[in-house]
Image (cartoon, rainbow, N blue to C red; front, side):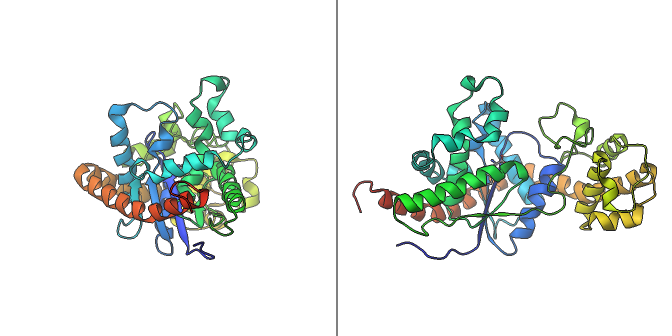
Length: 340
Ligand code: TRP
């Protein structure tokens, strides 16, 4: 009936609500690629989450294909990781409803992302935007995922997932039914900042395209953006302590380190004492070398949407096979017809 132990399973999702950039690549896609070696991975395109704010129906399916293409271009292997659209696995939405009845209003009232996203006009937000973290808990727990790679901004949602898992297990006297999932701490590159402002996250919603490097930018665009990136007048410091209060320098050194797999200290050993006139061309070179193959691969996948659709359909089939037994067991535990 209940499983006392859970094999190591990773789950994560990316919303199909805009073009992906270097921050998504270093903070998510590249990390997933490493994880597929050691974990059973479920990686989906969070289209149910995307519609918590308006999405153009004529574009949504293509946005979903784009995220799938980015997963594949980053090196995810559909034979290892299941890659699928969230909406193609009904169990997510069904379990989310049950969890809506487990989660407490007080828990959701504390969610800072809802406060940020709903802004001044909370009453005009969709109800989905409010209950979004409950769906996220269902995404994770319907696979009994044990590990969730998330950025800083999603940590609170993972905490809520842990609370929901614990309360469900207690309420229904099903100890250990759901695992309490752990965050996977992200190394260098977890938080890539805007090229125009070292204190703001690199974001697809920033009105300035100069603030980010998109996965599909050409070598020339990457070069120009790095050339124009905001800096300060000082040369690079010799040690990481010297990056304190220098958000732009810190960000550029961090990007370099994440792309080459070095630590910031190692990068500074080489570039400390040099000005941005010397560092920026070196940074542009490693960025172009790392990112243009990803952009090229993305374009190759996008040129063959039928192949992407085959991969998504196969991923959905695997995901359904993994999710259905959990949902059936949950329905039995809750006591739905025909009863325990
Ligand atoms: N909310 C996440 C984001 O915007 C996407 C997401 C949806 C997710 N469901 C998830 C991430 C489950 C991790 C696990 O980035």
